[in-house]
Image (cartoon, rainbow, N blue to C red; front, side):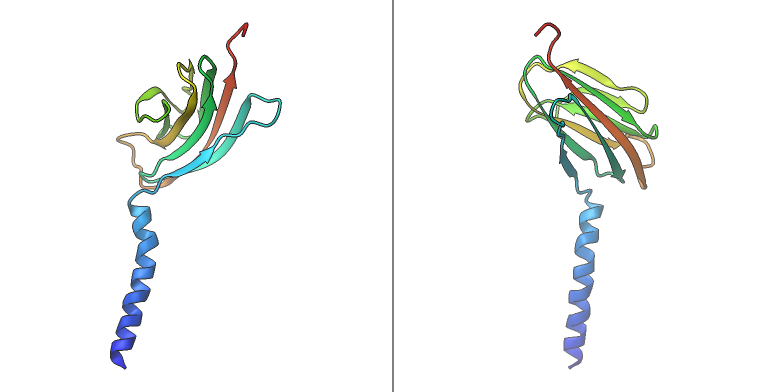
Length: 138
């Protein structure tokens, strides 16, 4: 009988450790940016915790202009990644946003994260504003 109690304690401890282990590994969240019909801007509220970034995917056609603005504490920043790549084509933080014309069509990733060198142990709330526009005169 004591063996069964020990086994129960071990199984219970493992059940509690698995979700915590996922957090410690820095699970990344992901959200698709959706624009309401007839609009070209979307605003989302988010939370970045510890070293785990949060990704926002936005579809854009070649030649469209993307604009990203982040409102949050200075230790929170973002990178704009090309489709299928970890290469940043733009970065920003706090009051500094990013705007650029995308060279290729596809799903671009806006990765919101704690800035390198910041105390990333806590959680920070932010608002992310994403605009997608066709080229002028197009």
